[in-house]
Length: 195
Ligand SMILES: C[S@@+](CC[C@H](N)C(=O)[O-])C[C@H]1O[C@@H](n2cnc3c(N)ncnc32)[C@H](O)[C@@H]1O
Image 1 (cartoon, rainbow, N blue to C red):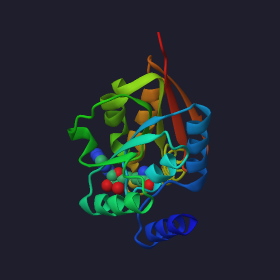
Image 2: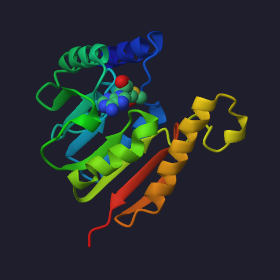
Image 3: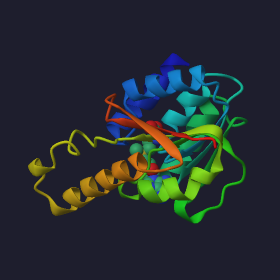
Image 4: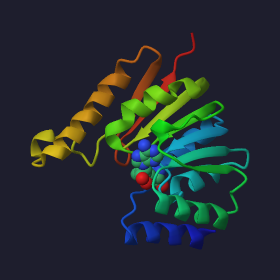
């Protein structure tokens, strides 16, 4: 399956599909292994690259992943079949903010619209199991969160402000302990406190 994985990466590059950086992926795979994560909810599937790679960590893992773009959804569906993971990856075509998901998860991976992270967190944090964790990608947004003054475009500045708000929100959240990692494009790991 190494060739198939390479083909997926090549496709993403050719068609400008944003997929997770390798170092972040390795970090999450290690987290999944070390914490015995078995159920995952992913917000933002794109073409299925991260979902497939998370599922490949262990045969006992099952994933629900949500993608709102029709075209990417169809690509993801095809790729999940190529890796014979259709039994373990449930792919949903929907806006994650307009859908209700059944069940509880050990891990929620947020990797969709950067301006909506707080909304995803608030909507889905009650879907975590005990000791469950929310990992969010692109917390440093190509380094722009640390150097906002360099940004000329107003829309981009607004987006960076939203990511900063999200960082403050998770830092101050009573129900979670959050750690930040300078890996890839920046990851946050928010683990639920169990009272
Ligand atoms: C960065 S890509 C996901 C990459 C993927 N996790 C990977 O690493 O292979 C973000 C995806 O989220 C999707 N998206 C954005 N907002 C969404 C929403 N509200 N609900 C579902 N999907 C959304 C976009 O269409 C895009 O394909």
